[in-house]
Length: 166
Image 1 (tube, one colour):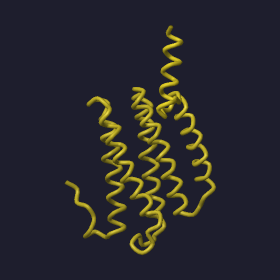
Image 2 (image 1 turned 120 degrees about the vertical axis):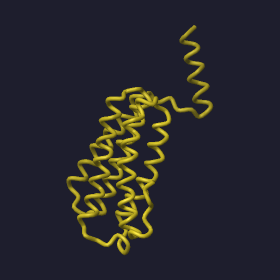
Image 3 (image 1 turned 30 degrees about the vertical axis):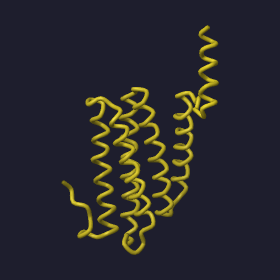
Image 4 (image 1 turned 180 degrees about the vertical axis):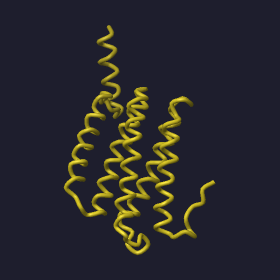
């Protein structure tokens, strides 16, 4: 009887367009993407390309954070959050070390800022699914990423147009 109910549920999900991917599949795919991008990062010297690769790495790490939060693996979530913020800090450092004027040559700077804007919304969504105690590492990551994003905005727009911290 349980087998029949499970089969009926699977058919219903498939008929409705629901996905029946097990929880283990996304992390495996994300780990593969992460490794591929880390290998590409080692081979790339162009700062804009490196920034874009670091954005892909941060996206994969954010996916791992999302998965860890959904499965309640807070230790893995914290580890992925640390790697995530490190990747964005590396992206910021790569672009700052170019010595380029972000206002006239915005490639890389703008890519990072746009990615962080999107990722901050995702972090807020992830935090909303957690308990108050579990949310602290996500809130710290939001603070760190907001600071990095603010420095990108300041480089892109100049000190007068940069957002003010409240």
